[in-house]
Structures are given as structure tokens and as C-alpha cells.
Amino acid sequence: AQKITQTQPGMFVQEKEAVTLDCTYDTSDPSYGLFWYKQPSSGEMIFLIYQGSYDQQNATEGRYSLNFQKARKSANLVISASQLGDSAMYFCAMRETSYGNNRLAFGKGNQVVVIP
Amino acid sequence: GAGVSQSPSNKVTEKGKDVELRCDPISGHTALYWYRQSLGQGLEFLIYFQGNSAPDKSGLPSDRFSAERTGGSVSTLTIQRTQQEDSAVYLCASSPGPGLAGDNEQFFGPGTRLTVL
Image 1 (tube, rainbow over the protein chains, first blue to last red):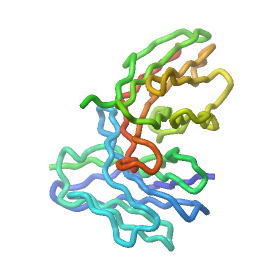
Image 2 (tube, each protein chain N blue to C red):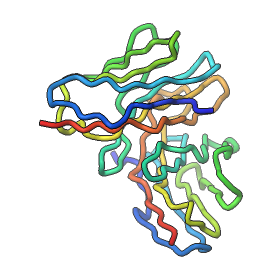
Image 3 (cartoon, chains in turn red, purple):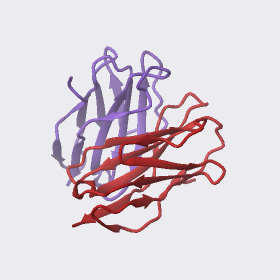
């Protein structure tokens, strides 16, 4: 079963505008972590932000924030004030920690193109 | 400090040949992961090493795939009798280890692009 779902088609975003990337997840583990990674065309995976399942507040890292809605099993990424360098694939991932398994399960990604 | 390194960066091989892919994790990181990324897809977990514990091999797609980690550091992923469907980017990542500061982030290497002709 798919653990991470990212279904948005490729997105074009105007520079300086905000963009929201959707991510829903499926788990029965009460303890888990949610991650967002950025993969530019060069191919490297760049860690952006982390949200723990027990964290009371939404995570923020600079221009990145995670809209965590636990009851809906949703972990959307918000990028504020988009920049041309934000053009990339964005992957949502989850780690289920109760079973001693540290692996990340990734979604299929969202393509974002920032236009001037 | 140095990040995760992988070699080779690109590998082209013929169907049926064996290949070895190498990963050097960040010094001191006890956790090491291998993932595979097929064209246009997300990452698929392959195998996870943690310290001296038995590795979690549950993501390996077939018995043609194996991996080892020597001395708790360098890891080698071996694919025997390669098939065209093995063509992908193979990514290695490391992290400090469960419960340790900074373990919420897996640091990825640049990957090895494998092409099987």
C-alpha cells in the first residue's frame, strides 16, 4: 500500500509567490516523522524540513513551513516568497519509528517550476 | 566536513554483468541506507545498516542484490547478473544513528547512475 501520496501535477509558480505542495500519508504507527526533500535537476537530495508526530507546533525552517494536520494525515509543504532556485522536484517522506525501522518511505514527488 | 560520497558517479554495463557500487558515509555516522530512484520516480528503500546490528534487507528487490558494510563505515552494493530494469540512480544516505542528535536528517550522497544495456 502506498504510504505517501503526492498527486499534484507539475506546478508553475510566479516568483515571489507562495506555493503549497500536498502530501498525505498512511500509517498505523503512533510514532513517526515526516520529511520534505528537494531534488534539483543536478540530482542531489536536499533536506528541507522535519515534523515529528508528537510535535505540537508546525515545523518551520526559513521560507519553508509544514502544515501538519494529524487527524487528516496531511503534511503539506509551504514555500513562501518563491525564488528561481526553488525550481526542483519535491519529495515528501515518512519514517515509522515504533518498529525499529529507520527507513524512509517516499512519495513520487511534485515538480515545481518558478517563473520570473 | 566531507559529506556522503559515492563511486562511480556513472556506470554503464552490459546485461548479465555484475556491478559494485560504493558508498562512503559521513565519518561517525552509524546508520547507512541504500535507495534506488528509477526515472521520474521517488526513492525506493533497499537496505539499512545500523552499527553492528544485522542489516534490514527487506527492500532488496531480488537475490541478485546484496550489500555489505565493512568496519562500520564503507558500504558496497553489489548487483549480480544485471538486468535492464536495474537501470536507475542508486543513492546512499547516512545519519548519526537512532536517538542521536541530528538523526532526523538523512544526508544523501550524489548517487551512482547505473545504465544496463
